[in-house]
Length: 443
Image 1 (spheres, rainbow, N blue to C red):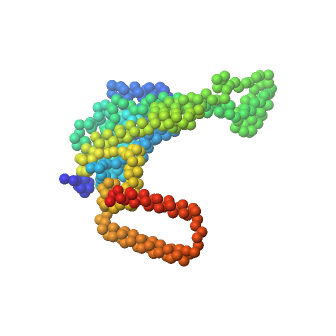
Image 2 (tube, rainbow, N blue to C red):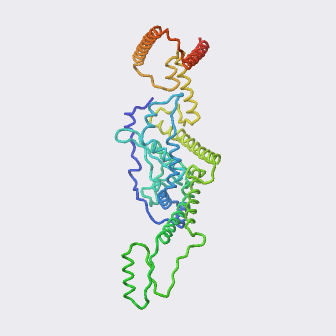
Image 3 (cartoon, one colour):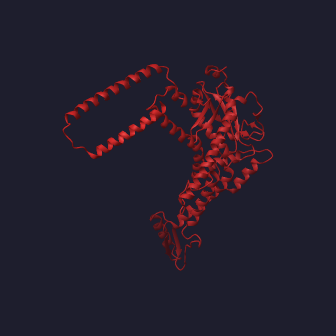
């Protein structure tokens, strides 16, 4: 028996997220040693990922990394996802899919690829609508399946074998997997250090130096020069005694600072290959051709296709059983993505069906059933109004044609025929003959 929405609102739970302490992100300077310490803590006998997840949050401040992760997530969220039962969409599930939390759920399921684990908790809001939230990752001990009241708690309560919580939790991700952000960390850390050195290089060699000399025995002269240089602007000052020398030397391999740019580009390319499998869809590569660009785009599309299949497997194998427990009609259906080829075929089919319907009678029910269009309750009334409007339009066209025919009879003495008009008439006649042959095929 189908569970009504009113019945569902009575089946309220006590959300876990309301009973845990969510601590802020610990922002510290991250280096390679920090990365290694976080890995050691996550792989220890008593694994804790607090340091690792704080590191991940800091990594996502990198614009390039955040952009390519968003690109993969958008390829999933922007693709046409449908729940189909008996080749038809289900209105109740379509409404569920249009909720804000559904897109949040898809995003968090994709994040399992980057973070290594995702635990979602479902509940009903004050309006009785189903919703879901991410259980903070730092409060989850993935190996033993524990939810920690505090991220530093040595003990927690198990959730995998808790039958009371089973209808409210959806877990995905290998407990031993630390996600793609783990290998990405080294490139972001190196790039940050490189940017710091690059900024220092620009500060030293990007602005002119103010160099002044003074007599080493005259302290007042030195003080006056220092005051004058400070008042002359913010560029770097150098005060040296007469008789001494000063020179600023470029490194032989980095005379123009290009070494910093090359290291930055190398880190960005490594991140692009790690997340997207290639580089050319995120950066204009000099010397690359159309064929090479097409290969890179194909690689990215294969990754996006794999992501969509990954999402549908989770939805069909894990979300549907959960929705069934809450009374949603998903037992006889499945989630599918319409790929671009399917959309092209569907579009061409619609065009052909419409063209055929203009020439031969086609039952309206064919369109309602083929394209899963809801049939209006007042269908008969709407159909009658449409037929009346069509008849009136045909009558108006007939009247206009008769009036034009009278005008032509009155001007029959004019024998000047435009060749172009005659050619158009022949073309029209040929088209009419083609339609007659087409109609005879159906008669």
